[in-house]
Image (tube, rainbow, N blue to C red; front, top):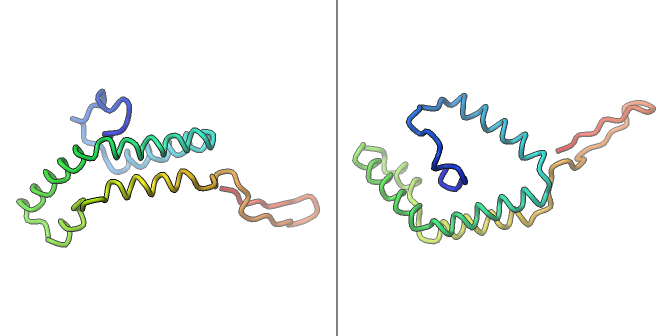
Length: 125
């Protein structure tokens, strides 16, 4: 939410159910599939840039989350997994850029089988 252009106007006072989140994610995935490869690549690069630009804020918020988790008695192993270690944001941004540079797999034929004359089955992503 931190990186969305309109995050400041979202109403965060309402509890959102897991189902609502899943439905919204599915709707967004359909929208992303309709974008061009260049548009999807730009989104990924913007996410990587936003991560690096907001690193101090992300680390600060992570530290606050860790303090709450420790005070709430969360297991040390869980708190450890929640901890953003030095260089993690840069590593995440680099990984996102690497994904952006990969060949776009959407709408590519993965498997093509001729089932009968003039009847072809194609599996696509």
